Image (cartoon, rainbow, N blue to C red; front, top):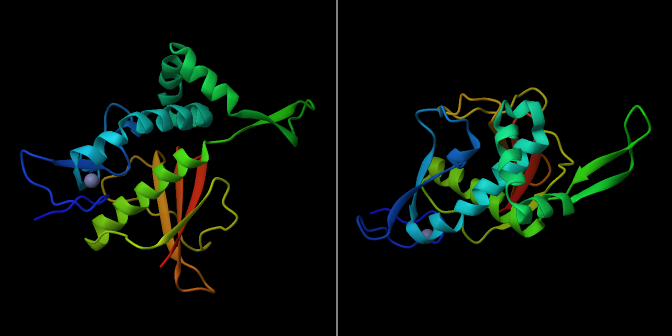
Length: 202
Ligand SMILES: [Zn+2]
């Protein structure tokens, strides 16, 4: 009997049982890898992420530009069609005070909504952890950084999960802190461009 990897409820076939893709399959191009990671999830939890998954994909792909290999154009089109989505994207883009391009123009920085990005990335950690460990990540503290201050061990490259050979759409690395063995750092990279860090304190 499986339980939902997020809320822990018992899953019953034809009642509340579904599967969640981790990472969500919408971040991949139309021709998706055949064996993406799925984890048992209740219909309620699964439904909660549908809109956020698409929003994240749009924002990631636009920010990654050419590196998203076509997904950026699709996402830009989708955003331009919807004033509310467009306004939200623009309002999170701020001038960088010290970053300047070669012509002296200020650079732009994008700030993800903290609650949203935290929720979204922590769900990724929970999903991959569940897949590997067959248990839910419970009673732990998470902290998320939009701009990681640590680098994964230099001798190792990012891990590409089997089935996620569409590198660089999504790659990740998990490693234990050198100084504090209770801390596990998860580094996620999307489209070879956007990097985030989630630290789990066990
Ligand atoms: Zn659930």
